Length: 68
Image (cartoon, rainbow, N blue to C red; front, side, top):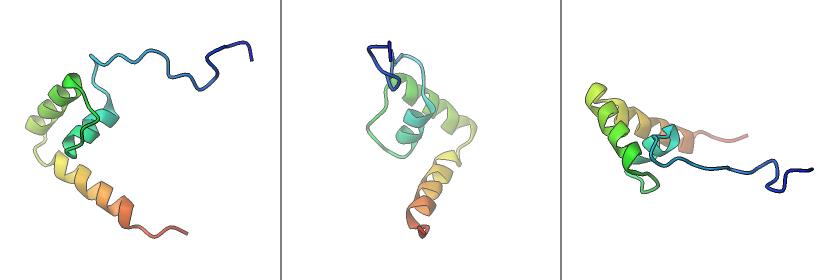
């Protein structure tokens, strides 16, 4: 492979732009988010007030589903 970073390189992350995973983290009360994510999460919460509850429920369902 000629790329010294490797094929799994993350590259540059722009922390000034919201990211769906970090917004989800923010809505669940997590700490792995940045100002842009919190602003977007707050906008989402104002537009769809029940959305954080859906996020919490989906996380709970994923944790309680049996694995085969």
